[in-house]
Length: 151
Image (tube, rainbow, N blue to C red):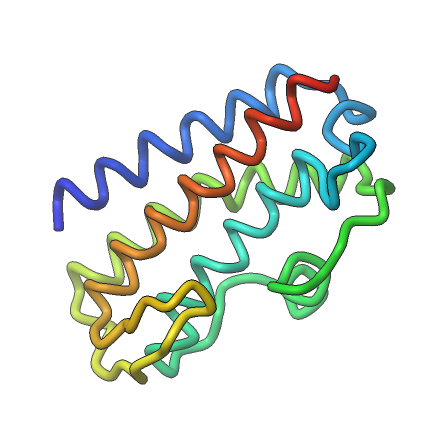
C-alpha cells in the first residue's frame, strides 16, 4: 500500500498547486460547454475519497454534511465558492492523507461493504477502494487540465 499512498500524495500535491496558482474567480469559472469548474473537481475528490474509504467501511466521514452535499456525485457547482470554502478544501486535501494513512496503519478499518462504481468497477475490499480512489482522482485531474485551457 505504500506505493498506492505515494501516488495519492503526489496527486494531491498537483491539486494543491491549482489552489495556490489560480484566483478565486478562476477556480469558480465554469467554461462554456463544461459542467463544472476547478474547485468543484477538487472538492469532489475530497468528498469521494471519504465516501469510498470511510463510508464503505461503515465509519464516519471526516468532512461536514454540507461539503458532502455540495460536492457529491451528481452535484453541480454554482460558481460561488467562497475563499473560506477554498481554504477548507485546501486544508482537507492534505489532512485527509495523513488521517487515512494513520487510520490504515492503526487498523481502524475493520469492515468493508462491497460496492459497484458507476464506471463498472467492483470494489470488494478497502485496498481496492483506495486504489480506485487514485484512478478516480486521475480522471478529475484530466478534466481540470481541460478546464484550465479556458481560463
